[in-house]
Length: 375
Image (cartoon, rainbow, N blue to C red; front, side):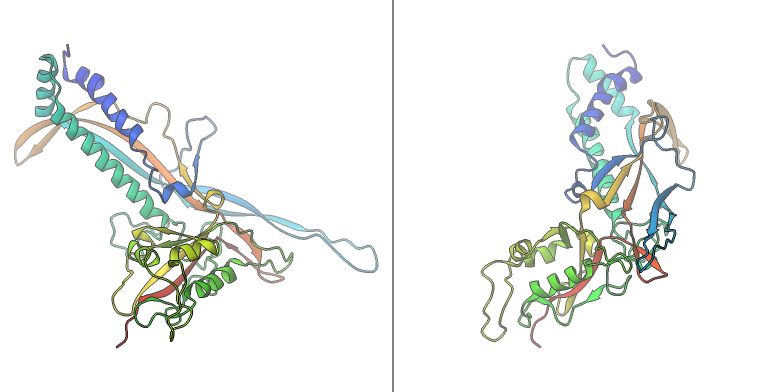
């Protein structure tokens, strides 16, 4: 028999919370599943102790060849230097809170041999809602989280998402592969996916621009950026078009592909994936445009870091809290868990000339017209 609230919370609620956590993985979003996951463990095995600023130092070598070719033996020292950057970690918490009234009713039900199914359902629903919110927040952060909007409660200008456009060229903020780094390729007048003004050979046009951008050559070594599988991120409405519209080959006779767009993209080596955050401002209205986000090799070149808290600090113990509002005092029981995460797009150093170079990531943005109808 449960003798006090804390015994009830420990014996009945804790297993319930743990079950929900096991069933509802925070990283279970289909998009998050694409990326490499890594527990960032410190020397003591208990996790990286990030400073109050949340900044984590990262390092990488860059080098120039030590090769001389001529008619006599000659030597020149090569150079390899360390480049340094920082990635920003963010802290999150998840909490379980139960009112004094709910605990009292739970205790009476357990003491009487019954099951407080309504209260259990409430705790489960609260946990699932919290985990779903955390999951969507993680997804939001791996994009350009705020798209230039600085009023978001989560806004942090020093946090770099995977897919944010950039021309900085540093390890902290690698440049994208757009023709002009930091600016999306604008194909909106030549690629119109649907409508009576749909253009022809749209798959070929997007493929050509993507492969051209992902073909990055080092000025000195002539080595190419290694590119494996390419993905194309689109919004749900754009995915609906890809699943229901065919690429045209002739705008006069309306000869078209035997496949829908999505299958044609897969056939040429580009896998479309869907998420609202790829372009929150996408439009399918007349002359509406959308930005396609293309990236490559997410399992090797984009890493989500889970930073475990110090041992013993994952979940707090239950605590009884006093809440006062308008002079009225109420009590509740609270327990919370600490979470910390960071994300990093792998940077590749490329010599862009004999004397200059920059760091690049496997991301490019292509702007197209979603729908265009005849006037």
